[in-house]
Image (cartoon, rainbow, N blue to C red):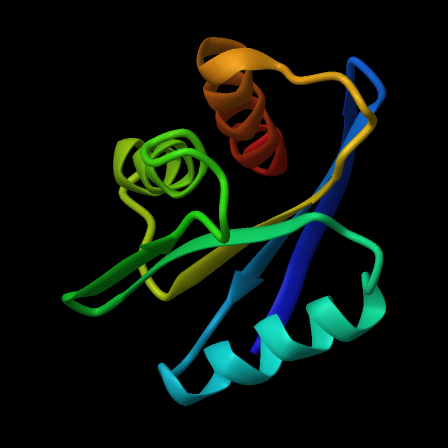
Length: 115
């Protein structure tokens, strides 16, 4: 596993920290997720998506269905990435973003890693 890039975005007082990993096998994913959760104990959500060979998974970690894992997976697919894990940690800032802005922010968080 190799951490390629991180980025932070603030949207209406919520902080979104994104991580882009190049991964070699599926066994690395749980360790990465657990380490990120340990490092971000006060975070409200730790969402992710990955693609390794033909195995694809997304996780919303309590965010409304379709607003977190799906946009991250869209970035992976649109950029034809493989052997990749993208994780976005959200610290809730006290203001609800609504489904549209929440989805766009997760999409922006993931796509910002590829610039």
